[in-house]
Image (cartoon, rainbow, N blue to C red; front, side):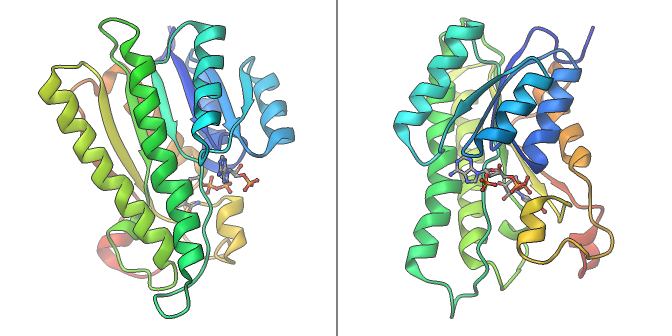
Length: 242
Ligand code: NDP
């Protein structure tokens, strides 16, 4: 039996980088996976490879969230695992970043994760006794000062606060569902290449995050909720580099 056999997962931004690695790992361990992304060609190809589903989905759109969840329920009947992963990075420090950039990053990361949690929980609750697991992809930048990505860091900080609050809500309500955040250090993906950081020494690989997602998605982590898990090979405690 796989570690997530019989579970149904939805991964946003699943066509590339970390989301792609998550999709491959969850499918390998027995989950059925719905990949959602704005990137259609790569998303459809991956869904085909893992016998999953693809939905074109911009996480900023409430309508798209309704469609993605409705597709998941129509195709697989339930939702067990939600990975709020879609994202972009825009360089800029507090002096150079614009309000427009701030709003864009907030819309994708913070609002996108908020909508995902809100409608994901609704779908999980429809399955009585659900042990659903929400995994929010934050970033080391939420807790460590990276001056050059102010809008990104602020939006990732909102994701951490949301995760803590939702985990407390589950506990207070007596739900068996869990909500956790992962804070990756620098991981070698197209996102890092976009800011020219893909040649730094000591980068992590997408599977380093996918293995953490797999643990949080599985029942092995049934007593883990509200956690902020840093995956950075100690870079945040020694300082510098990736
Ligand atoms: P990638 O760029 O490889 O993948 C992100 C995916 O999300 C892409 O397919 C992208 O499409 C898609 N996407 C972008 N905007 C939206 C949107 N509005 N709605 C739906 N999908 C969207 O990046 P990573 O895999 O590196 O990043 C995944 C997550 O991990 C992000 O949240 C990122 O912030 C986080 N992270 C990454 C780190 C790293 O070092 N790589 C470190 C810390 C956190 P398109 O390519 O068309 O834009």
